[in-house]
Image (cartoon, rainbow, N blue to C red; front, side, top):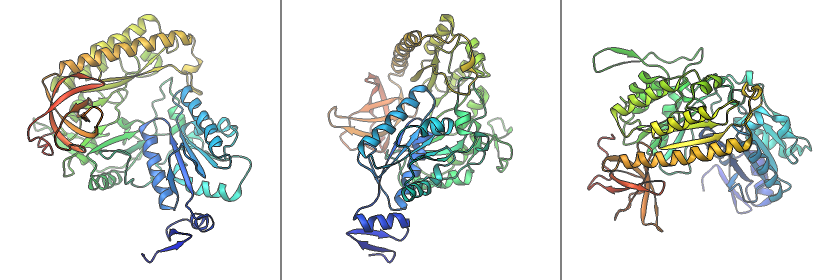
Length: 493
């Protein structure tokens, strides 16, 4: 047994544990159980993983969020009214599992509506988006005090102006894909969006911290690094952000200064090893066609961008304060597909924005048909507090929003299938993730974000391979492994 450990009541106690965790194990013969529920975006998923590792280091035992626990943490989302409702439902559910548990509600919903969250029966802690890193301290304070009223740890959104470094994460639920948070906050203030109020000002993580985390994850065998943030395109744009000046030379011998997320992509691309980089999102409010073309110079960057359009109508885009046109958006698509006809695009579209006419909706449907997205996330407009759109005239009835949502989803599924069909006979690099014994297929994702299903006599889980795409199948495509291509991805694209 190591020198920094002792055993009590059959529980091995580590000196690194918190005093409360040690005392609990001594008294109860088990560790403190904690369940964490994550709602919303990839940033929340990343932050939840960081919290799990913090609590584990302190001596807690992580359990499923549906199981009995002494402490429950709900990491909330507030992008839509539905997200708020799901958060409230889960808070009430954990109290039915264990009425005596400590319940901590954290994240965007807690930041934007702390009083509403605190009014829910059984809530012990309400913590905003920049307080997640301190949550273990807040949990232990609540366990000691046993207060009957919620304890609030929420800053005003104007004070959310420093990057809260959580330290490097070491694992993810996926064995192949890991998220790396590079940025926090947004200053675009789109008229429908509450996220600037929930996440605060733009602040960026240092390149050194990002590279250290990336190298650690690669050392553990992860093969895809997904760069995520509230608005990754805004990386490094805040006043006072300091990064060494970097230049690259293009094929014509001209020097170009790097800025934005390209700083991170270039640095990651230079790390050794067979892995790939995926951008979780790019905002056309920030980048243009010339910028996205530059990104194609990085061989490890996947040929897939989640490029949010939100509407195909110029009239609606103007009301949304998106600061680009449908023509600007399509120019980016054209430039990327000139280089790679199979370049994959996914997007978000809101239907039923205040004042959206049938013509406006048809413009959105037309854009889906023109671009042939591999995936479209369709959202029905949801009135959000503090936003300009909430005060606009012309809010549409729920039945109109539902009808348009259903129609756009059908169009998106049909055009995605057309995109897949157009790629029949082409070859893509696929990272395989798992085997399904029921179907006999290995499943993975191509660099352009197509779900690919293949048969193989050898175990190709967690492996790269070149695949010849055959035809649409289920939610993606069937493919045939190219001979001797497994584990030998000499050139990614």
